[in-house]
Every structure is written in structure tokens, then in C-alpha cells.
Image (cartoon, rainbow, N blue to C red; front, side):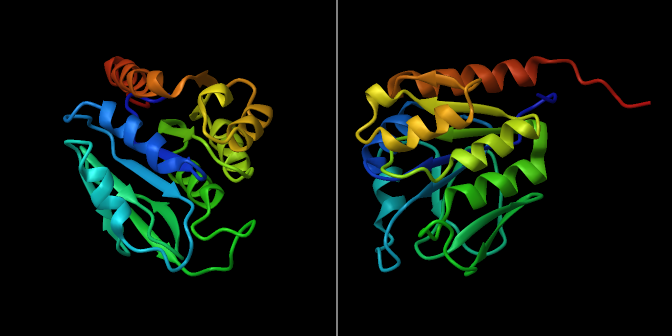
Length: 199
């Protein structure tokens, strides 16, 4: 990775609320890298997800609005029925067609994060009942970023993490309760690397 991680993108589907609550609730309140979350939900889902997650973390949790600025110590939730794209310094919402029956699509967010932040992107795939996220996670690694997958044995639904593990066999595969500490360690290690100026 480069001298610092710039963004962490997290994808979840079936069982995601419980998994996200445990993951975000275990991150330190001063976690300095923005976290963008895509949770599959129906197009008519209410906006309670952000408030439910806010109850378990000291980080700021927000429902994303178009052109939402990325800031440290913040968690950004993709709203229902919108794709969330990662641009330089902010997030963009689109109503482009569904991707693999999903909007928001995990793959769409992951790929845009990789294309924007490349080696300073960390992708995380959690529990889910389909294979959304596997292609995006592969793209993150192909762009030089890092991949973390919830171990299928610790997932409420194994399908999504198993698909991601097949697509990205070099990913770090960890039980859910170990992922927050691992991310914290990854970010700290990346930020501790000396910055080398290009000449």
C-alpha cells in the first residue's frame, strides 16, 4: 500500500446489520480512514440503517447524499435504490441500472474505489446470500489494494464470502470479531510507512 490508506469499502447482504454492528462497534472512535458501506436492501427500505449503526459506534454515521465529502472518523451508508460511487474526496450517487439485481451494488462501489484510490483502498466482504462484491474485491487487489473477507464459518450467510474467497484467494480471511482489529492494524502499519517523494 501507499503511505496511508485512503478509504475502506465494506459490502454486506443477508445478515449484514448484525455483522456491520459488530464490525463498526469494534473500531476505535478515532479511526482515521473513512468507511463506505454498501448493504443490500430493497428500494423501498427506510433510512433507519444509519441510525441503528450510529447506536453502536462513536464514529459519525451518515446516509450518503450526492457529492458527500469523505472525512476521517466517518461511516458512509449507501442509500436504498442508489449506486454509490467513490470519487476523489467525495461520494456520488447514481440511478444507473441494477447490477446483478442490486442497487446499491457492492461491485460498483468497490470498483470505483479501486479506480480512484488504487493502492490505498481496502475492501471488506461480509456475510451475504449472493456473489456481489467478489468482482469488485478482485478489482481492488488488481489495482494494488488490499482485501479482507469474513470467514464463511462466522457468517450468517456463507455465499458471499465464499464467492469472494474464490475470486481473491490471496485475501485475508478472518472471523468477524477479528476484522476490526485487523483493519486498525493495517491502517496503522500503512500510515507508519515512510513517505517517499517521487523524483
